[in-house]
Length: 173
Image (tube, rainbow, N blue to C red; front, side):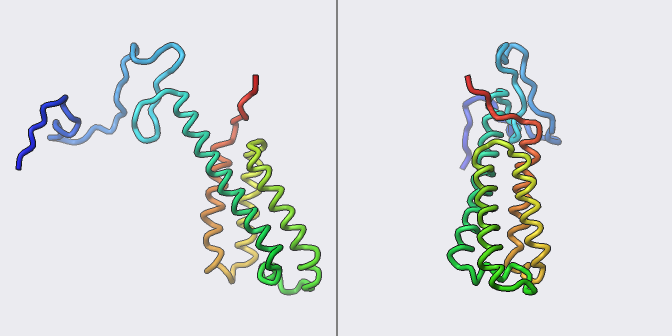
């Protein structure tokens, strides 16, 4: 069965040789004085405002995801302290771990989650989150079969740090 295409020429219609990898050229009259055309990450051309919106959405998802991880870990450690205590060095007295260290670390995790959710000091919070996750993996190397996920989460925190470096929260007014 042959399909006849009667519309405009499609990009794949002219593929007889190598595919050019350069982004499409946008004529100067296509961009207005307020919106400068920029290549988007997926190769499409969009406005600078659209690129900023996509970056903001990505940062928001990273912040919410990291905040969820830290909040979940904090709540779980308070609900089941015996399970959470296994991630502390066994040389520490169990009373110290359950009565002092677990609640203190849970408070630290909740505070970190709140800073991430606030959208302020994102770079510092993301770096601290990555270091915290890396520290948990290093201290508990024998449990890497469970904690390997922390590597991916730490990389997400580093991606958030890289994205937020030099950016400022939007001004109000």
